[in-house]
Structure formats: C-alpha cells, structure tokens
Length: 62
Image: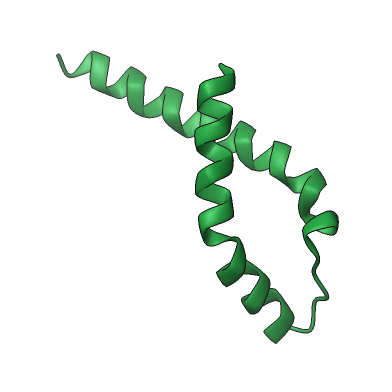
C-alpha cells in the first residue's frame, strides 16, 4: 500500500473519529485517541482491501 493511500485512509478515519468516539462513550466504552491507535493500522488495511476490490471490479467492467 502506498504512503499516499495510507494518509488518505487516515484522513478518512480522522473525519469520523469524533462520531465513533461519541458512540463508544454512549455505549459505556471509554475511548482515547491513544487507545484507538492500534486499530488505525487495521482500519488502513481494511480500506486498502476495499480500494483494491473496487479497483479490480472497475477493471473487470471495462
């Protein structure tokens, strides 16, 4: 995965982080940015897989 894509994925994650944090806290889960850090890499992997899936499907439909 390119560093550019990783940065784009992290920007997407940061866009939704406040909402995710609020929902977790409403569910009684204490959250901090530090506690979420290990999951950011997992999120980037999932986003990369989704990106590749969409790219492959797009190439098949040409």
